Length: 210
Image (tube, helix red, strand yellow):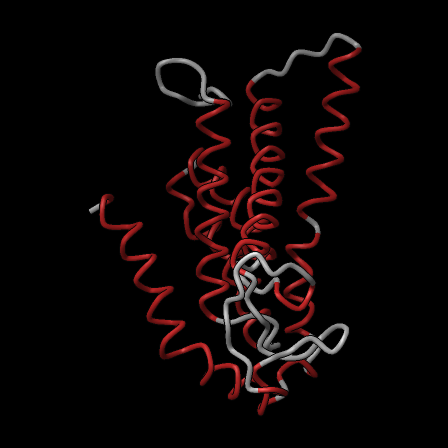
């Protein structure tokens, strides 16, 4: 079953691009969910990840200069921070690679589906108007949650909740296509699992012991 996860994920993204993205964008725009304060607020959860990761890495670096060597908890902290850093780098490069336009016009008169009927991938285009795919918010939220899921798998529902909340906010506000969010979640999970693998130590492969 695990071997089918990536093909199923890619299939879900493709089906969303073909049949779900545009109808949902039109529905969300018509409902004006973004005027309800709770939905934009949900997206802010993801915006905390990068500053916290930078603070964690900076703090760990300063502590290391003073002789600190991470124990189980310290390695888990480093793993969480590394996961966010990987996700940020990955989503930035992928946005440039795919060059996808946004559901609505947000900045600098960017072309969009709602205003201009534009729904394209312009590979290697560059520019803020062509950075919709994948969702960076979903990526950076899913990355540390994947680390926590790897550490405490029985609490998977708890770790999934922040990712779902961010996704709901993004889609309700029409900030992203459904396929952007699906792709972002995959990028984030891959980043988190990659960070875990890089930090893994010992026979059980647990960077934080236990």
